[in-house]
Amino acid sequence: MGWELHVSLAPDPGQPLYRRVVAAITGDIRSGRLRAGAELPGTRRLAVQLGVHRNTTIAAYRELASAGWIDTRPGRGTFVLGVADAGPIAVPTARVATPTRPREILALGHLPAPAEAPQVALARAYRRALRHGGARVLDYAERGDSAVTLGHPRLRAALAELSTRARGMAIGADDVLVTAGAQMALFLATRALLGAGDGAAEGSRGVIAVEARGYSPVWETFRSAGATPVPIPLDGDGLCVDTLCRVAAQRHIRAVYVTPRHQHPTGVVMSPSRRAALVAFAAASGATILEDDYDNDFEYGEDPVLPLAATHPHRAVLYVGSLAKLLAPGVRVGFVVAPPPLLRRMAEVRASIDRQGDHALECAVAELLEDGELRRHQQRMRVVCRARRDALLSALASELGDVVRFDRPARGTAIWAAVRPDIDVDSWHVRALAAGVSFVPERAFDFDAAPSRHARFGFASLDAARMVEAVGRLRRALPEGPRVRRPVPAKIVEADLRDLAPPP
Image (cartoon, rainbow, N blue to C red; front, side, top):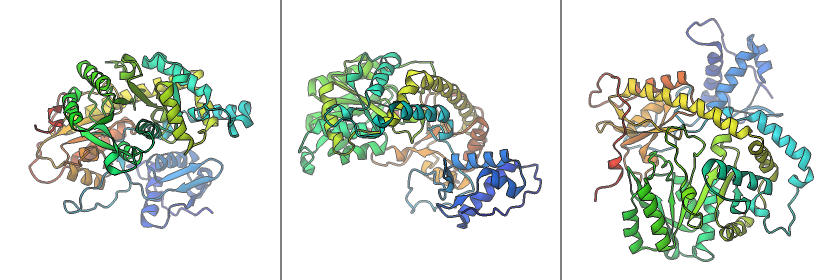
């Protein structure tokens, strides 16, 4: 059931009409009058209620959806999601107080907004998959087919062609397993590598070496699959392989998880000498390299870098890719490139939790790859993200040039910045949320949750104008304490990454 929106829309030259509609709805959500799950009127009905043009209510709903306040479900309606939460990290309450949420959070996020996805093309491809595939893509696959859990053959072939053409790997469809996202791929790989019984007791768990700064859900994935992640420090050349070798002398390392093409979150590219040393370590120890190429689609042509799996035979490297960041986070399509025997073991593990995946979706995504639609979308998003990157670099240099140091990223969708030592980054993060802007402090990526000295600012989710506003809010949210100098223009210089590694 819908509800009436009671709000005065008197002329206000200082604020666009659609933003006033946004403010009214978010105010009702924050006050509790609109609870999670409540249905909102359609854009046409709301426009009639308010006496405004429908384009105004459409723009308002789009902004509410991109900020995480509402969700529009085709054929069902528009519903409240609840109070938006842009903070991925909890800061100890002994240090800072919990802020009051502002009306809107400008998220300096690394993922493009779902509204950027090729929704029309994906919907068209999905309809064609159903029309031409019919019952075959909606029914169970042939139970006697041992390859059923490897993914639909059409998508496996399209991903093999993509990996060969765009990522430099000479592979075929038999080398590919389709998964519901990269985390499923890593879970299956861990279980397949450890083998039956390896996770039976804490002391017998297999060890997976991981980068000391990274994506914490991946570490939890390894733990849930029966492995023990062990952190290895980083420096400006990537994973410290010398330290890895010293750890391996004390503990048997079954696999090494790395993001060598664009380290998450620091953006460091593993140097050729470190790549060679890592492969040599794997060959000597029998460890498998788990390469997560999480954002291959966002490279800006300035300094192209091939995945590790492209320069070394995939017998030594298990490659994990994903299309979720390019299409949309909710489109759970990941894939693995590995030797067929290992893929079969992973498929056997998968069969116990997911019989065959979503063949209708897989056929739709395969069509987007086959007809070039995904490649065209990738090119569009590269242009968009490059422009947004440059806007954020300019705003940071102008407003925070005396506070942060960073380099110009040649790939990815975020900037890793070293913050001036007298600034408490974790306090800044909380104050920024109170001011209506979010970024991610280093603590969120640190294996041991050490105090933050760096921050990550994403540039994929906001347009240039809102990016400038977000950085202005960051400036105003700087913690009290040592006096901060007036902002001065700064050159974009490479952050000093030597302090990534702990002292000897």
